[in-house]
Length: 256
Image 1 (tube, rainbow, N blue to C red):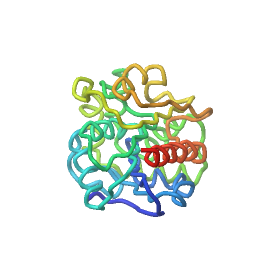
Image 2 (image 1 turned 180 degrees about the vertical axis):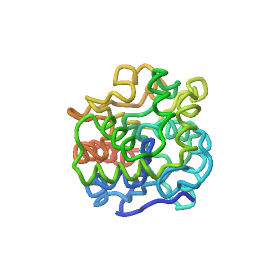
Image 3 (image 1 turned 90 degrees about the vertical axis):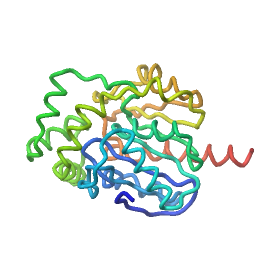
Image 4 (image 1 turned 30 degrees about the horizontal axis):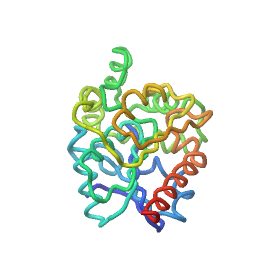
């Protein structure tokens, strides 16, 4: 079972996955807006946070471990929330059509196709060695706008705790994996959330062409003034969209 935090109560549960360089702590600013109504489990994916020494860095291997953790926790109805790197992981997990999956939320997701990235940017990420300066630059570039200082420090600390083997596995392999021919059409309800100022992953139009081509039962929301790190930067706006989506799923289940 992956290391995780858990709090709150209510169904469906939110299973929260983090971005490259993050951890379960990525969701700490957002959790207080969610846990009054929903049980929340924030995971550390292999190589990051409290799972820094856990192996298994391919997209499929990460999906395996998320699935095993959900089953070990005995969750029977949950919304899997993938952020950036783990958006791709969440898609692959959803393609297995697990019985517990009530819905999918993709927050600034890496697409199922190879992630568009210049050679220079990929070389820069590969050269990361966890220095304080590099971690600061990584967090500041991703957030696009300044984070509150205390939250920024948490993100920097997480970025310095990463297992560099896992980090480089994503840069060189995971981000390049192409799942577009393997996903098929997934009918689970899906919410895709973009930050209006996010320069790290494809925007809403490109996501519609790639990611959402597999997810006909979807809607897209854009948070104004948000960069890539929405769980840290715009937790209230993000949580409001997540809660509304969960309520729609509950209401649909009652109708059925």
